[in-house]
Length: 63
Image (spheres, rainbow, N blue to C red):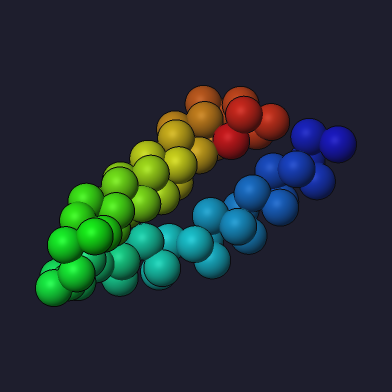
């Protein structure tokens, strides 16, 4: 199971990398959503960063 999980993570992380490398925030004129983009940007970046951390430490289930 561990090797299959590692292979799936290899694929996921390599596919996700270009998306996170290109991820940028755009400004909005809508005051009702101030901070929402930053929150989602931070959340997505943290999720990916955590996945990389656990992957590098061979904690594939947590990754």
